[in-house]
Each structure stands twice: as C-alpha cells, then as structure tokens.
Image (cartoon, rainbow, N blue to C red):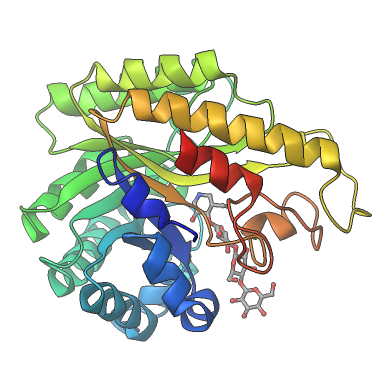
Length: 328
Ligand code: G3I
C-alpha cells in the first residue's frame, strides 16, 4: 500500500506540485492522492494571462483553480511581476519605443488587480514578484525592464497593488539560488527594506532548484534561519533535485545511474529531515513537477536532456527517495 505523500506530511506542511494542462489532465487521481496544493507551471504568468493589452485568457488558470476547489486543494499563484514570460507590449509604447513609468505602473496595477480579484478567496498565496535580485556582483536588483522603466520601487508598488487587490492574500517574494550566501544576503536586504517601509509582504518563497550536492545542507539551514529572522513565512516553492551537477552536460543517459539514484535517495532524506525541523516557519513545500515523466529540467540547461529530479518515476511509481521521505 502506497501512502499519500501529503497525508504523511500533513502535520508539517502543505505538499504541492507544479502542474500544466498536460500533467494535470492525464494524472488527476494520482495528483489528488499525493498533493494538497497546486501551482500552475506556466499558465498564470503574464504572457499567458494577458498576451495582449486588456485581452485576458483565463481558461487554463480557471481549470486549475476549479480542479483545486473541487478536490479541496490549496493554490499558490505564480507569478505576477517577473522579467521572464512577460509580453513585449507591457514595456512598449504605442510608437514602438519603451513606455514611461506612469504607464507601466498602470499596466502593472491593472494586471495585478484583474488577476487577483478574479481568484479572491481561491488563491491564498501569490508570488507577487519573482527573481528580482541580481545573481552576481554587487548590484542588488537584476537589470530588468521593470527596474529600468519604473525604478527600484517597482517591487514596493507590486506588493502595494497586490494587497489592495486582495487584502486577505499572503504575498510572497520568490527567488532561486536562495541558499547561496551572497544572494541570500541580497534577498534579505531587499525584503528587510520592504518591511521597514511598511510594504505588505508576508513571505519568502525559496524555489529550491537543488542538485545532489548543491547547495550544502548548512547553506540551506542558514538561508531558512536568515529569512525566518525577518518574521516572514517561508514556502519551498519549486523543489527538485537534479541528478546532474552544474558542470555535467552529458546527454546520453537513458536512466539515472545506480550511484545517482542512491545519492538522490540520501539527499531527499537529508533535505526532508532538515525541512521538517523548520515546519514551524515553512508552511508549504511544492515540487516543480509531479513525476519524472515530465520535468522542466528535461530542457535545462541542455535542450532535450532527460533528468529524474522528483519523488516519483516515469511510471508514477514511488522512487526510493519517496520511501525515505515518508518513513522519516
Ligand atoms: O508554449 C510554447 C509552445 O507553443 C512551443 O511550441 C514550445 C517550443 O519550445 O515552447 C513553449 O513554451 C515553453 C513553455 O515553457 C511552455 O512549455 C517555453 O519554450 C519554455 O521556455 C517554458 O519554460 C518554462 C520556464 O519557466 C520559462 O521561464 C518552464 O516550463 C517552467 O517550468 C519554468 O518555471 C520557472 C518558474 O516559473 C520560475 N522559477 C524557475 C522555473 C524553472 O525555470
């Protein structure tokens, strides 16, 4: 008998999966059995929800929200303001040049308010701003069009609009490489600034795109403690454990090697031991996918290379990693 993943962990945190129309429609029962939270992998992004100005396309997002409601699942909204997957029209003016601060703020507000009001009471937490921090160097913010056109306060504005649109929603800042000490300090500094200015932010999303050895358990622990020291809620928002190191560009493997599989099992055990220690501050853990039959990592960083980063294999069978997690 295979236990339900979320039921085993229900005293610790919600357990979520990112889904897309293909995975959701083909694996409904399986998803309902193991997860009690859903994130849309792509269909709540700006380019999907508002491909042209004022022309909102909610079909896939509505389907996900209705499915979650029907099955009494939580939904995380992902994501409102990001430098990626945002259509060009957002940043352009009618004459083909770039738009001005005031116009972009109005477009940001209109998008946030339209989307959040639609799902009021059904989406309780939103990744309001995604990946705004610069990866390397001393610069705090990534040099995005949001920043170039509006200025550094685009983050404050996004959270203010979001809070106005749905005062009951929990508002998150979400980022990757979140456990890297240098980037962690930048994320900490930026969010601390928001809090000090009275901007309505309630949580930090740790994406947790990890691999077999990086980041170290110590760095993950330090990141959790540092962010939690701000008094914010933490969500693990996009967890996966790639079997490849950053340097490994192999494309020939048809399955993980026995060594990779064993390392992944141990890694998942260690990671969940650690996350469960912090279940008072971490209220939700979402995997960036359902099972190894489909993962965004199949295309990253090498297009078309298979990866096996999740707890269930390509046939939706629990991997040894799953058994370690549920037996902890
Ligand atoms: O929809 C088109 C399709 O029409 C076309 O035929 C196909 C050809 O390549 O591309 C399709 O678009 C792809 C889209 O996913 C939907 O499948 C894009 O090329 C592809 O780039 C896009 O990738 C997504 C990526 O975000 C883009 O930024 C991944 O699925 C999605 O998993 C990934 O998710 C992000 C989080 O939102 C933020 N954190 C990092 C995470 C992983 O990159």
